[in-house]
Length: 225
Image 1 (spheres, rainbow, N blue to C red):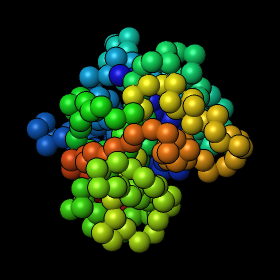
Image 2: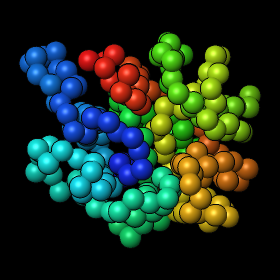
Image 3: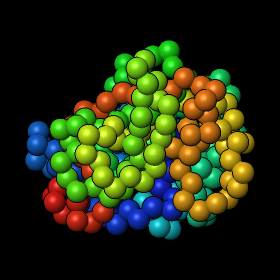
């Protein structure tokens, strides 16, 4: 599995520039990005797409690990174009995970083991108590197959809410979905739009992440602190 994290085009505030994730064991703080990487050690390769001047505090230290590859890029028009920056590094039959890095949660390799063509992970209903911004919501049939994605939903009551973690069983599925989008340079395109283009031809399922923490704006970061 390959993990892709794009830091381009998002309002990160101090997400990747300040230590604030608290470790109770040793009473220290660490950077969010390092905490995320600890949760995905099972991935064969980790791609971090970022703007060298804006996104990452230069004092962030990655352990010497050949699996981490940082790709520097100028800003793109949308999340999909950012992710496509890794195309030349991934084989078409490889499984990929895409993460929106404005939150963190507990996850392990077993969560990605199923026979579907892809997975959109959701937030446990007990973790949807905070006043989130608009989120993508999922609709399932009686076999738990995703049949519809409603993007940027404000009312999340009794909804299956996307956690911003996605998996394609094969990289070529992501490329296939991108080719179905008429204007790939349109602003505000996200991974959910790629899934939407493939829903009729692919079997997509959902899984739930544990201990979801939302850090999508400064207010929620301050609340977490």
